[in-house]
Image 1 (cartoon, rainbow, N blue to C red):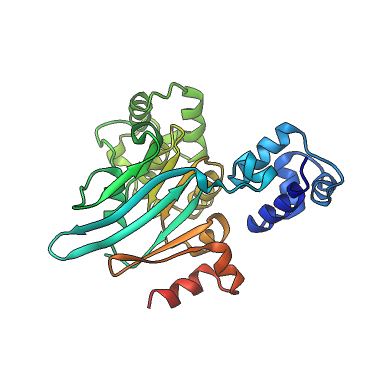
Image 2 (image 1 turned 90 degrees about the horizontal axis):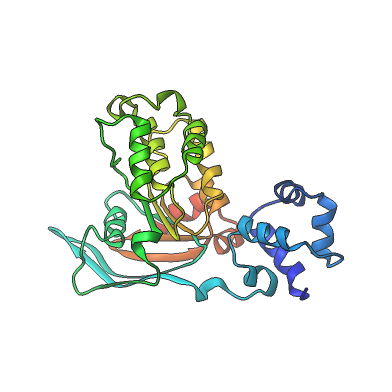
Length: 293
């Protein structure tokens, strides 16, 4: 294996803020094995390389050879503008690549949800282009800010309907998600009878039933209890493909995200990596308070 792999492994582990012990636990190997890989004294098996790539959310080429993943463009937004009574978005240009973790930040009314609706195709901007490099119909999943659920259905019926629409035939997965998101006992409850937090959990299940190349989540943890929020972030960390999340859960951005976009005055005023912010000895919250003044 090329000499760059030990450097890549150390670099990616550090960026992910994982200790050798924690990485070893996820790989079902000893800490000493991880240490030997990083020192170049041994090479992991192919199945461990594949698992490492999944953990770090990178391609095998990037993991082994250091080849940037930015060749894998998913979506390109060009000169996006949207006006209602007043301009909301002004000349937004944005590229999203494979395996990115993007936090979209901004004050209330900054246009974050409007931008998501444009990406989804629910709003049509003027004199702008949205260029997809993937099949949007099959590869884009969205959890909107407002729950798009059918009140008259039972929880299990809502999930089954979503699974049929998404062509997901996996009852075992559905039952596992119900259990994991603490909705098993409510599976025969009408959606209309659920609490706000339960509806958010159900919306998350519906939006992640199928695999996607881009998953967009708009304020996903609003109304969730602390246990559900903790599980949500652990769950998201295992999702493949790129993710863009509108959130102000700053501690989780520090841990789970690779890139931060700040929407301000109708424009993307900052597009910066989490690593760069941390290199300036700032947390995401400290950076945001300063940048969004």
